[in-house]
Image 1 (cartoon, one colour):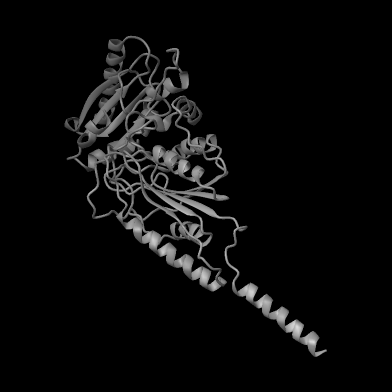
Image 2: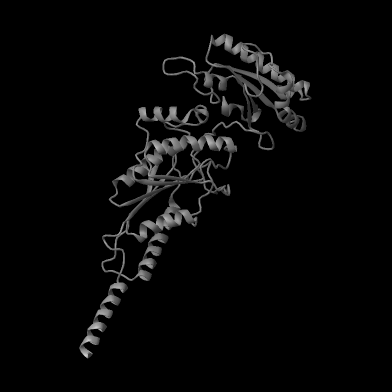
Amino acid sequence: MKMFNKFISIVLIAVSIMVLFTGCTSGAPRTSTSLVLGIHENFSLISYNNKSIYDSVYDACYSYGDFTAIVVDGNPQVCASYQIKEPDKMVDSSKHKAIAEDYTNQVISSLNGCIAQSPEVDTLRAIIMSADALNESDCEIKKMLIYDSGLSTTGPLNFAEKNIIDADPQILVEQLKEHNAIPDLSGIDVSWVGLGEVCGNQIRLSTSYKAKLNAIYDAILTAGNAKSIDYDTSPLTNETSDLEFPSVTKVPIPQDTIGDDFHIIEFDNETVNFQKDTAEFTDKEIARQALLDVAEYLINHRNTKAVLAASTATYGTVQSCEELAERRGEAVKSLLVEMGVNNAQLRVYAIGQAESRLKVDDLDSNGNLIPEKAEKNRAVFIINEEEFEDYI
C-alpha cells in the first residue's frame, strides 16, 4: 500500500511539473500580425494604447509568431519587423504571459519612431506590402490590422486625381486587376479601424460617402480572397499630431449639407434638374428648394464667395459642352440671386466635358457613353472660392 501511495505521489508530481512548464509548444498555432499604420497629415493621431493594436501585437508575441508594421505614405515602407523567439526552456502560464506582455511593450515602443516620410498617401500599396509580409510567414494564423482613412492620393487607387469615390466598385476592381494591384489576402483575417475618418485640412466624409468608400475597399479585399473582413466604425478623436508631416493632397468630397464646414456641394439631375440640352430647369421650384440651405448660408456669411462649377457628360463637342455648362451655371447663379444672395459672392466656371477632379469617367473602354455615369457628370458644384483650385 505504501508503495502504491508513493507511486501516486510520483505521478502527481510529474503531472504538476507538466502543468508548471506548459507553454506555447511547437504544436500550438502561431500568429503572424501585420499593422498598416496611417501616420500622415490627414489622419488622426494613432494611440498605441489602442486595444485593437495592443491585442494584435500581443497575439503574435504570445504565440511566438512574427510581426510587421508598414507606414502609409506616398512610398510605404516597413518600419518594424520582428520574429518572436520562443524561450530556450518551457515556462509556466503566468511566466509565458509576462514574457508576451514584455515583448508586446517593446514592440509597441519601437513603433513610436514610425512616421510618414514621403508626400501623399498610397493605402492600397501599403496593404499589398502587408499581405506580402504575411504570405511569407510560416505561421498558421495571419492577421492584418489597417489603421488608416483609406483616402489614397497616389498610386492606382488615387482619390485625389479624379472622382473615383463615385465609381462602381466592381469596375474599379477590374481596373486594379489589370494593373496587378489586388492584394493576395488568402487565409488572412483583415480588420480596419478608421476607414473614412480624416482630420486636418482634409474634407470630412458624409455618411453616404463613407459608405461608398467602404464599398470600394470591401470589393478590393473580397477580390483578394480575405478570410474575413471586419470594420470598426467607431468615430476617431480627430486628434492631430504636433509632428511635421509631408504634404498630402486634399481629396475633393462633395458634402450632403452646407454649414460651418462648407467646402463643396454637388447638385445633379436628382436635385437641380435641367431640361435636355438646355439651361431651363425642369422644375424651378424644386431647384429652389434644393438650393435653400446654400442660399441661407451665403446670405448669413456675406464674406464667403462661391464658384458655381458646371460640368456635362462627355458627349458632343468640347465647345458645345462648355457653352451649355456656362448657361447652366448662370441659371443657378440667377436663381440664388433671386433668393437673396449677393451677386458679388458668386461666379460661374464652365467645366463642360473637360477633365476635372470632380467628374467620374463616363466612357467605357471603347469610348461609348455610360448612361448612369453621364448623369452623374451633368451637375453643378458649388465650391468655396478659397478652395476652388483644390478641385479643378
